Image (cartoon, rainbow, N blue to C red):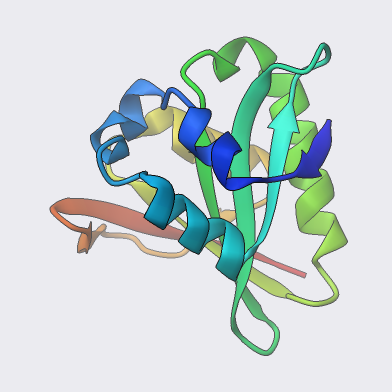
Length: 143
């Protein structure tokens, strides 16, 4: 179930292990920035459990960028998560014929998730220190 994302939703996530290094950065100021500067949504499981917060922002006309923070217990609801992510990407396909995202090096589940959502790997080597000390790969979904 897709809904409006509030700063409190971002702050209430207990981040999955692969994103746990971000926990200290995801304070109210950062959450306000994400929610205030992108079209931000929550994805909930049937029954209302918060699975993820995701946002799409404009890099420039026709090119969007997606971010996502995922709760540690979202894995049991992967089908819901994938369906809702595809729905959001499809909803924005006209506005952003190209949507990009970065996935941390070594985050195998993240790489599988974005591929299931129609993103294709564009970098053969990781982008060094893309997020602080973390190197990442670039993916894009082009329509």
